[in-house]
Amino acid sequence: MAAPLNAFCYIEIPASDLEKARLFYSSVFGWKISSGMGDRYLVFSESTFGSGGLDGNAQAAAAGVLCYIKVEDIQATLRTITGSGGAVLKERIPVGGDNGYFALFKDPNGNRLGLWSKN
Image (cartoon, rainbow, N blue to C red; front, side, top):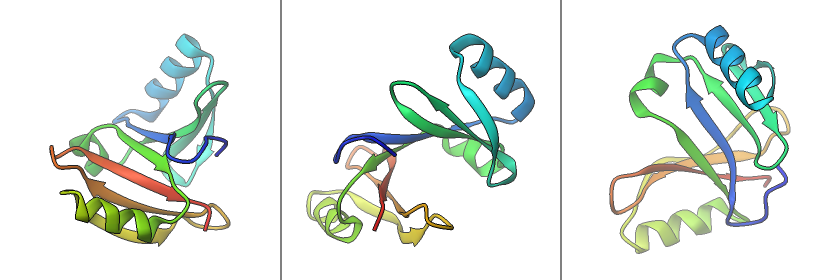
């Protein structure tokens, strides 16, 4: 993830039909889309934002699009979030392999967002 700190670095888009989503985003925007993590997740990349995933899990569709923000220290950021009126939805956990860590939080207006860090 090439985004600077405190910038959006990854996005997950729900897709009930992964093949339709793959064809749509690759033909409309020219995104390169490849197999991802499991049979219900495709990974995409594009030139300015970076990367993201098309998530075919039913829970993703109900929750909507999920944007991740790159931070230096997830635990410290979660403490700041809770001290500023937000709430932790999912504590820091590994993404898998050498892909860093993520956590989920809710801002004071109820928006669900993610954090990502290499460490």
